[in-house]
Image (cartoon, rainbow, N blue to C red; front, side, top):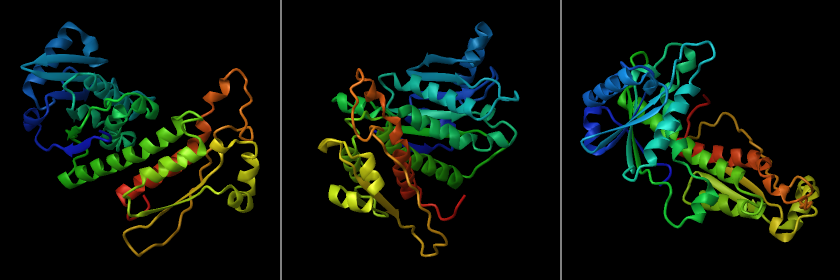
Length: 317
């Protein structure tokens, strides 16, 4: 299941009633998770092995799994919120490798609430990192019959002492992270798909399918080559040597906001090039099959639109 459900957990003591895998992010043996047994495990382990607070460590107690992922120091002049992102990603990756890992509780301890503007979005970045770690590549998902994305629910506990959020504010962060995960899924699938799996017409089909049921985005796709030759001569020139299965396509996505108070219309244009050689495979030892990231512009635009459709922003932030 992707993205997993993101649930704000206000009382960490109740987390063990729903989640049997707990992932905590911190950088000190004195980290307080709110779960006494977990705190004691970290303190005892760090006295024997100080590296516990630097890497990813797994502990077991009474049928529960505890994963501690250290984010390292955050006070050096070159540190920033990416350290928290990386620690969450590693912790969730470790947790999802376990057979019983359908539901995970992520605790962002007070260590993550570091002073300074670089850490103002620590909470949101941590939640986004958790969804990142649950993603599997498109062609990997299609190859295996069973689901390799086995995380159904991630409970989020924020223990910040400098930046305190209400339940509504944390729910909003979960909503934003979920919307961004939907968009990033599309962007990554389009960009990372090889030139055959994500040839232009297949990208068009994929985008059309991805926006099924999304009422606030209108999808228009032009596949007629004669129309493209007439209306988009530069696109036609770039794709002039492509065979039929690599024929070009133009995808238009239009988002309609939930309010009539529209002050500005913004256009995003993303290029999606499969083979940047007029559409021709030069047959240079198969190395052209790696030409896939030129689709990144198109992937980013489609992903942004999917994220916006879910988040429904009412102002430009």
